[in-house]
Image (cartoon, rainbow over all chains, first blue to last red):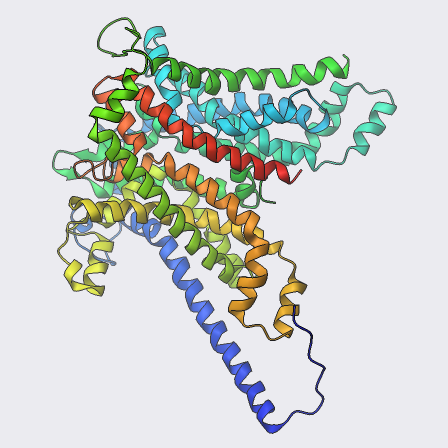
Length: 294
Length: 290
């Protein structure tokens, strides 16, 4: 760092004018920044807006590059009719995501508490392995599952999808919940134990209520991951257990893509995720990076 | 129950799940890679081949090398572009205020959009007849007016890069804003008082402080770029030809369309190796903090 200049009390005329141009310059740059921010926000939203608009267009209007049109709700009805039957995919997605979360969160919470409050043998190794499994390409671990499911009849079942989805969700859940429990001060727990509570009572009566918002956040996060999961569902389902993201392929007809229907289906897939993502926006980054950047 | 027993009992179910859903299939994949494994020939896997699957990939499969090339180029370009744009956007949004925090909230939205859906929307927007981007580029730069983006190998590659960069900028920006918040404000102010220009302050004060976060972001993005599948599948399905066929897509095709699971497993394991290197560095950064 260079040394600071001494404060100057008297401003010469030149300095005064420089002060003013400086201020104007500052205001100019602030304006430029605002414009850049607005442009960036717009670019980020275009694909979403475009899909949103197309979902309300008629079959004919999609093929015209127009901003103004008579909106229709027809597409949202059509996608649930034969032959598309998006309802069954919606049902599959909902069941798979819910059950995945219901299994993952309690198991992850138990482990997270232990990692947070105790010293375990090989603790770091176990945590690194769990972290690393998040980075393994899905395409690698899906091959053995594909063969095994084929042999035991789990191909194209919701149960099969739930099992493999646990692979995606577990590392996130464990690290995220560990982060929340790390943040809960230990004194209440210790005081309760001095008063004669057992460790399990402490977990049930003190830790779980205090960690509840964190558990909800982690559940939502895992739900989004399971809902948007694509590759496992692509490999392991073909008729019965098809989920929403794979269902998008339905709208690729022989005469090309049916964009208005695709868009309507897209809205049905992403709308609930928008709401959930906004609900946990504070923790989104933390969940994705697992507390690496805090 | 004694804590000594309890602490391991609590971890056990999670370890079992991780083992069953990630470690076991990883090892099983490795085993497959040494066998002839074809789904259309009854018992699986069939004959022990040793390293023949790997040899086959290296020596006789131009498609394998093509997908390595596509993936490497894709990773380098998307990591560089996403990081640069996200850094710029983070610098713009970090100071706070109503507009800025509003836009920060908007950044969550694209992230709720699954990669598959991003692929769909970009295919839509680059449609040569009525695509929004197609029309836009035609107006800005007329020679691009009648181009079929997804039919041209280089342009299709450019489009999958654009879709990926678009999808990841928000997340990286949010991480970097978090990083910028931890750069001590008084150091920056001190530098400004000393008359350092905006660029100098950024280069000499902000950037060095941001380095650890930036490193984590780059590693994380590289990992996700390497395994890209969803949006490529929905956007170009590897085409035209194999111009946008990433490794994940190549493995998908060889294992499902051609049923060569043993061979696909060997390629998949070749993919695990760079992933392990990156994960090692990532874990180093994560645990350095504790």
